[in-house]
Amino acid sequence: MAKKGNRVQVILECTEHKASGMPGMSRYITTKNKKNTSERLELKKFNNVLRKVTVHKEIK
Image (cartoon, rainbow, N blue to C red; front, side, top):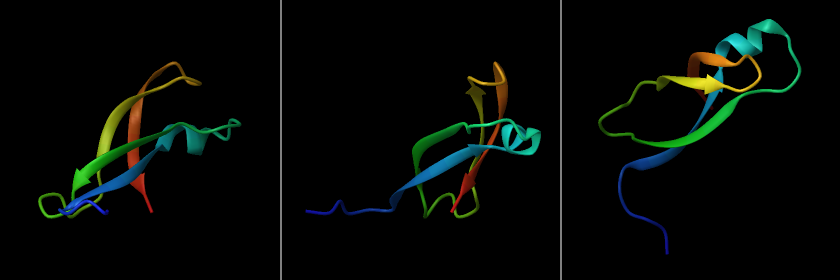
């Protein structure tokens, strides 16, 4: 049975890693409440390849 509510699963992708051209990618999966946060999510997360905390933005 499907869950009821406004929470949806979103994927966050690193912006700095994508721009650097290095192989691989840094992605995280999280949930957000679509009713309270209608715009795209943007969080600071750790990137293993670059070895630093970078901005991760929600992708489609």
